[in-house]
Length: 104
Image (cartoon, rainbow, N blue to C red; front, side, top):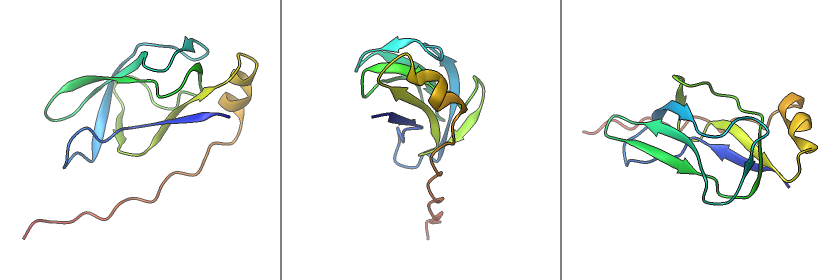
């Protein structure tokens, strides 16, 4: 079963992050815990690890892209044969944007 890779929320008020570098490419094998990309927020740059093992597929964000938290940016699939299917297939629907709450 494919595993979604989404932009994580690394800070309490973070609403997006910039993809600094992809450490794995489309079709590369990954193990759970392997760093797969670096993300920069307004406070820090951090590596983001794979939550599941398999093959990185369907990369949807390029280095330098500013990506909203929760946005689907890639998939991890179970076999090398699935890489092309997910990359060219229909993507999962994006989550609805969270309302912005202004401090009073």
